Amino acid sequence: MDNRELADQCRALSDPNRVRIFTMLHMDLCVGALAEATGLSESAVSQHLSRLRAAGLVVGEKRSYWTHYRARTHALRELGRQLAELADGLEDPGSRCCCSGGGTCPGGEHCPTIEE
Image 1 (tube, rainbow, N blue to C red):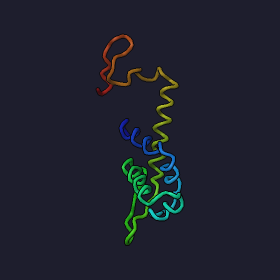
Image 2: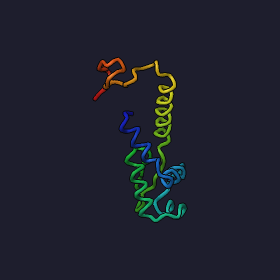
Image 3: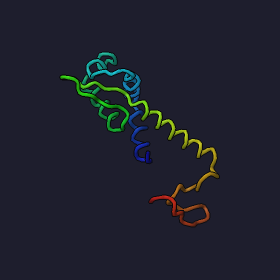
Image 4: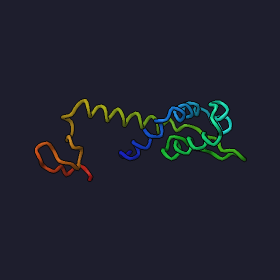
C-alpha cells in the first residue's frame, strides 16, 4: 500500500457515519437496510458506501435488484498494519532516513531513496 492509498483509507474512515456503516458490514447488507439501521437517507448511505468502496474497504455484490455490501476486513487489517508500521518508524527514528526518501537530509544532502 502506498501513501496515497493509506491516506484515502484514512479519509474514508474519518467520518463517524462511515465508521458506523463500516462496522455494520460484518454481514452483507443493502443500502435500504443500512439506511433504516442508521437513520440516514438511502442517498446519504449510498454516498458513504461509494467513498468506502473507492478506498477499497467495502465490496458490493449485485443480487437480483439490490446490491449487498460487506466490509473487506483484510483491508482494514492491512490499514492497521500500515499505521502500526508508521508509528514504529516514529518511535525508532534511527531506523530510516528522516526525510523518508526524496527530501533533504539534515546535513543538507539530497536523499536519493525518496521519490519526489
